Image 1 (cartoon, one colour):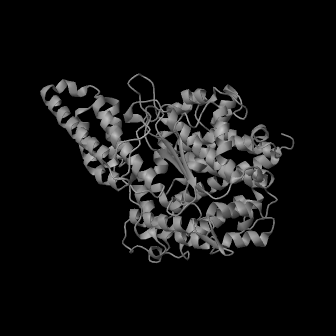
Image 2 (cartoon, rainbow, N blue to C red):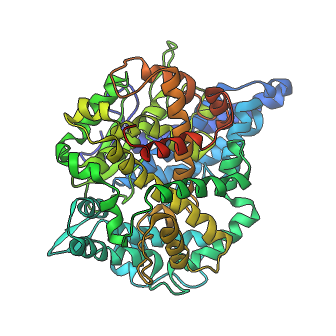
Image 3 (spheres, one colour):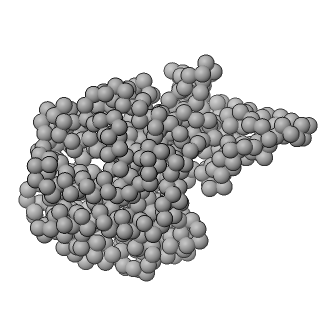
Length: 561
């Protein structure tokens, strides 16, 4: 009988699972038995090795889910030692099964191993586990992975423990305060309180800052063929040469729309968030889940029925960046029906407001995407384009800036002009970060402060402030270089898909209990069984382009529309 503190594992469909250690050991032993049996069968009947072997995919799925549990537990500041201990043996046992399987599933599983996706998930940085560990940077010859892990861990500590006015708060709360405060001096005070967080990424701005040390290493990795940007564009069937002109076109359109602005860095959140000031008080912290769940239920996505889990309370040790991940993967049951897996939304909210509501809607967009996947275990994963994945999460979340949605769920509405400004201020900032990443890795000797100040001054009308690295507020910049581009490019794809969805189905602002099933059938169910390029072009009827987003921006410049 297990002790009272022995962790128990969750199994979809069961209220209480067995002890983790026992369950994990059973996975390893089962995989080993399957491996031996499969290899023996292949030797006895070579022709049979070309057939699809469900037992191989089943073992592969168990390994996937073991990694899922490691990531989601550690992101919630929970112990995953039993899973970490068992992972290498199961990983090796599953790898031994792959040579005796063939066909598209086998190719997909082998590709997952080749890309490193089946490696043991990186452990949280030991050096970044405390403030004292952040006082000394890794050695100058430290590899990129170690530098990234240390920097991200220290960023997370700083982002969740910002000292101001005798209290300790977090990054998201301060940004919301900046959006609401009418006093420029107060806004400056709030932004400058984030300086310790900025310094975890860019130090004093010199060549030995963590980010500047990363630049040449990331650039070299990308040149050697490891560019996630190139992989993304390839998966979407887009040419690399298209990306920067698209980003610049969006930024230029915003620049023209906001031509009268003359902003300091601490003014941007305020200027770009009139909806926060008008409607944010209608979304206290306690209503985030209430509104989120009710809205998605009105579209046919019942959060409880889809087995979606949330851990959104702010507490020490949790990840500083909101994200959604698999806790378990959807699978076909013995009776032919499908489980929805176990999607997890992980964040840390201390306040409500429109910004945090928009974020939890976005993360729930990822969660309902997971729950809709209907494919074999070899393909039960995010699509092959992260930009496409991020865009899908925006299809419903962007309704928060539509007047009918606000009236229904918040009981009041902002003007069309204020909604468009609030929607695109955040999107354009993501596009600016996307262009920033392209440029700092194209020229790894470039000063990131100068690169950012040039973009911000030219397109956002924000005055340069040398030494104020206000760009360094997104953990993705160090945790996953190139990932911010998924948000910038994803905004283009999302606008295109939202326009097409409205054309085919109508607005998602009003109740439509069939909308989730409709969008799932067309966009969400494939996992990696079909390429993002194919799914997107089938839905749009053509290749994607930025025209829908640019048209929406032009609408903001046309009074009364």
